[in-house]
Image (cartoon, rainbow, N blue to C red; front, side, top):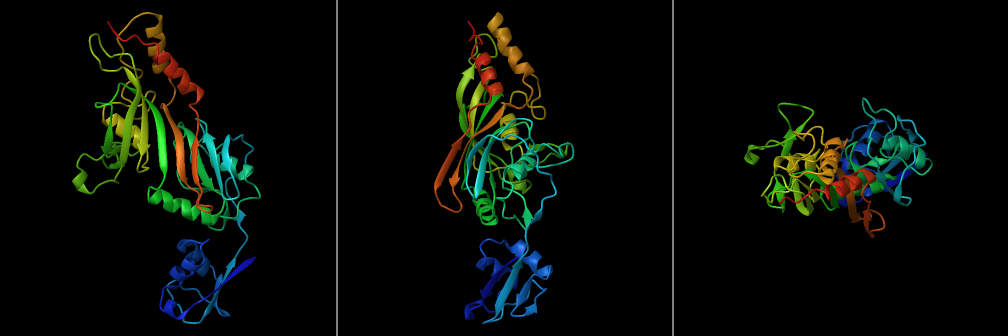
Length: 339
């Protein structure tokens, strides 16, 4: 069991104890310090301290006993991972479609957490006192792409702060039904839980209402495919790049649907299966069939960039398009452009 000893200077007197200790022990969050105090793991000199709100005493020495990390509740599972980067602090993987990030009803096993517990066994120093990976962001179960997890508490705390401050570069690729007008722009509209369906998110119609959380998505069309009707220039589908300033639940799916370009295959926010496309012949049939049969939202977390929380090195990782999205795009490229 490791023990941290921290001595209070004159200028520290009167500060709330959990706040003071967290500021001095960089590897611990204030909530973790508070939990340790309540568990009797903190002493002032030789006397146990049980009140996190207690004022710091000038000249006192505080001892924090750090217990060994307890095993995580989810079971480690030997699941193959595509690792993009790994060191003693972080691991980045290219998550496949169908893998949930956290265990939850309906997905208790086979999750990224289960896989990481096995892959990182012996190298996790404990997040909040538990031997587990520190997940600081998620992507949907059916979405593919880059995801980072922390292996130590200091890395977890710093990564969480980066995400809270939006000091992360995140780019996604999406294939949409139709295309937004204009083909590039920004959606700056808050998102909240839908009042009609609590499993869905929705754009808040009145941003001044104070409901929901701010959400900003920058988008641009990389490529468009086919046309909706004869004699029109409106695309039947598009490959979009979406860059996030914020990371709200289902943000890209909600914002793109709101501006008239829902993701192909989206079972929640896509109103129709497939695409509306003018044309005829085998290429037209193949393209429309590929869109109609696509089994998931066509969304891929293509790039993640940030400053390493410990080494301060600038990092940038990309994951290539998964095969199913690459095949969808190849089929859509064959759509006729009209007469």
